Amino acid sequence: MSQPLGAEDCLQEPRMDYNTTDDAVTRRIRAMNERVNLLKENDLYFYNQAVEEVRGGARVLVHGREMGMYASYGYLGLLGHPRINAAARKALDKFGTGTNGVRTLAGTLPIHNELEETIANFKHTEAAITYTSGYATNLTVISTLVGRGDYVLSDKLNHASIVDGCLMSGAEFRRFKHNDMQHLETMLKGVPEGVSKMVVADSVFSMDGDIIDLPKVVELCKKYNAWLMMDEAHSVGVLGKTGTGIEEHFGLGNVIDIKMGTLSKTIPSVGGYVAADKEIIAYLRHASRAYIFSAALPPAQAAAANEAFKVILDEPWRIEQLNANTKQFIGGLKSAGFDTLLTETAIVPVICGTDEAAFAMTREGQHKDVFILPVVSPAVPEGLARLRATVTAAHEHDEIERAMNVIIAAGRKLGIIK
Ligand SMILES: Cc1ncc(COP(=O)(O)O)c(C=O)c1O
Image (cartoon, rainbow, N blue to C red; front, top):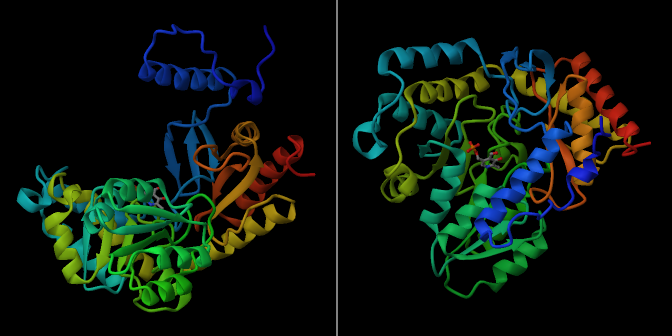
């Protein structure tokens, strides 16, 4: 048997031994497939694995093996919560599995209105609107609010859905250095007089886990008369004493114009939302294309989301547990010598360096029943490939210790830490 390839061999430029007359699309497809196949052949590919069973929020069954889950967005461990499941079942029994309509026409059910009211109350706004994914929400909301002739200023590390929304909008798209308020101010100053502008950012950055300097962003938006949109995908249920998000974290009250979030992370459902003043929501309801031209959220998913917001407020111990687990996880990995960047939240980047190192770390973890996954370039800058590990309120102290021991042993074996 030939010697298995190392991770580095699998990441070389794919062999371009196919027909030189192939067109660019064919070459692109083949190059990606070659890279994926090479990784698979060498046991370095762990994406797209089926989770066969979810056991108690923190453990999963994969390929028949029980593993600790350290790649989930379910920060408060709400997946499978009896109240949430019961609400979903009730809606399923009453309305069936879909809506057969867009919201504007035949697709609106009482549960959609109820969910939007719940979100508005949770986010302390006058109103809210929901969409069928967080990705679609950013795309449609940004491109409906700003357009040709306007400016949109976006943090360099913003999520892909924000970037795509900005590009789609046709507005002048400028990116400020990550969490760099001086640079943001320079950009705001550079917007021509009288031109509309919007600042948009993740509240907790999805790859690095750090938190935007909201007080300064708010100050600058006021000073330069800019709209402010924040993506709270990773801050709801994570930041603030009661888990309502970034404004509560900074004790700022209602300071964000457009509060975007997802129903697929802490909220164990699917979909996205915006909470804002009622005029903004009414405008989006009649102008945003993902609302008008795409089918409504299925009733069971809407009901699950609706109940989950209530559970967050009723069970504040989950946020305390998440904070304790986050502290334990970041503290343990840092003191072992890992670079975890500036994370303060449940998203913990474990920097490995090269893409190869991140793939190899993943293999070590997965072989020892720790479900971790790598994020490599171009999703993150070259040289900063990482495990994007997450911890949740469902993990127990000893489980986290065990997972950390596996990651630390792997880091030492691969020379990432001493
Ligand atoms: C910051 C951020 N915004 C938006 C999204 C998209 O949300 P969804 O997965 O619900 O479509 C994600 C998903 O990873 C995200 O991390």
